[in-house]
Amino acid sequence: MHNFITYYLGSGLLGSLVSSLLPFVWVMTYALVAIYLELKISAHMQDRLGPMRTGKWHGWAQPLADVTKLLQKEDTIPTAADKALYILAPMLVFVGSYAAYAAIPFSPAYIGANINLGVFYIIAVSAIIVLGILMAGWASNNKWSLLGAMRTAAQLVSYEIPSSLAILAVVMVVGSFNLNDVCAAQSGWFWNWFVFGKFPFLFITFIIYFTASLAETNRAPFDIPEAESELVAGYHTEYSGMRFAVFFLAEYANMFTVAAVASVLFFGGWNSPFGTFMSGPVWGAFWLISKGMALVFVQMWLRWTLPRFRVDQLMYLSWKVLTPFALFNIFAVGLWMVLRG
Amino acid sequence: MNWYNIVFYAFAALTVISAIGVVFSRSILYAAFSLLFTFFGVAALYVLLSADFIAITQILLYVGGILVLIIFGIMLTSRANNVEVKRRAFQLVPAVLVVGVIAGTLIGVLTTTNWPTANFLPYEDTARPIGALLMTQFVLPFELASILLLVALIGAVIIARREKGKRA
Image (cartoon, rainbow over all chains, first blue to last red; front, top):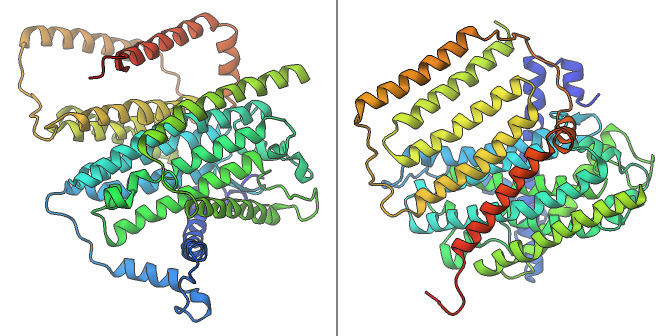
C-alpha cells in the first residue's frame, strides 16, 4: 500500500482527485506556518520581536491577516503588459512547484504517484518554473522584471546541474530513482541515514545538494533574481494581490520540496530516527514533515545570516566549485561501491 | 469511452492545438511559449504509453533545456517584440513538392503499418533496462553521442571565451 487514498477510494476519478489534492492542503497549511516562521525568525535574528499584536499571543494570526489582505487587494495589470502571458505566468510557476509533490513520499502509506523515476521527475518538472518566471518577466514589460527573470533562468539552469549530480550519487548507492526505495534503504536507527556516513562521501553530497537547492529556490544568499536593492522585486515587480500571492506560495512550496527531497535522500525520509520506535504510516508523515521543516528553518536561518552573492560569484560557485566537486563525488562514491563490492 | 481515452484525446488535442499555435503565431515569443504546451502534451502521450523515462526526459531536455535556450535567445535579441514573422507563401513549387512527398510518405506509413492497440500497458521499471542496454548492446552509439556532445561543449566554450590580452 503506497497510497492509502487510492487504496480505499480506488484509483478511479474520486481517488485520483482526492489523492492529488491532499498535498495542496499541506502546502496551504505549511505556507501559513512558514510565513509566520519567516517573520519571527527574521525578527529575532535582527534583535526585533516581529509581529506581536495580531491575535494576541505572539502575533500568531499575522499570516492569516496577510493572506486576507492579499485576497482583498486590487488586481492590477499594467497597460503595457502582455495580458495573456501576464495572467498565465503565476499559474505556470505554481504548477511547476506543485507538480513535484506527486513524487514526494510523505509517509510509507502516502506518495502521490509511486513511480520508479520519482526523483528524476522532480528534477524535470522544476523546469516548468523557469519558463513561468521567464514568462512573468517578459509579460510585465518592465526592465526590472525582465532582468530579474533572465537572472533567475540563468541561475536555475546553472544550479540544476550540481543538484542533479548530487542526487545521482544517492541514486547510485540505492540503485533506484524511487524515493520510497531511497527511504527504505535508510531504515533502522539514525546512523543508517546517508548523511551520517553509511557511505563516507554522502555528507559532501548533502552539502552540495543543499547549497544548490538554496539557489534553486531563489533564497538568499542566492536571491539575486529579486535583489531588492538592484531590481525592486525581480520578476514579480509588477504583480500585486492574489497573483503575487501565487508566486509567493510557489516559492514556499518549492522550499519545502527541496527540503523534503533532501530529507528523503540524506535524512531517512519517513524513517524514525530510533529504529522501529515511533515508526509507521502516521509517524512516517510526522518524521518527514519534521525533517522537512527543520531544513526549511535552516534555509531561513541562512537567508537572514548571509549577505547576497554577486552575479559573477554565483556563477563561479556553481560552475567552478559545486559542479567539479559533484563530479568528483560521483567518482568517489562509485569507486567506494566497486571496492566494497 | 473510458477515462484513458478521454485523457488521451485531451492531451492529443492540447498537443495539436498548441502545435498549430506555434506555426501560425505572429509573435516569435508566443510561438515559443506554445511550444511548451506541445512538449508537455507529447510527454503526456508518452506517459499514456507507459514510457515514463522518455516522458520525463522529454520534459527535462525539451522544456528545461531547449525551450529555455530558445526563449533566452529571443529575449536577448533586440526588438524581438517588433519582428514581423513572415507568413507569406513563397517558393511555391518546391514547397508543394517537398510537402507532398513528406505527406505522401507519412500517409503511406500511417495506412500500411499494423498499429498495436493495447489499451493501457502496465507500468514497468524502464530506467534499469535502458541503462543496461546503453552499457551493453548500444555502448558504441552511446559513447559516440557522448563524444559528439563533448566536442560541441568544448567548441561552445572556445567560441565564447575571451582571448588573453585581447580584452574587447
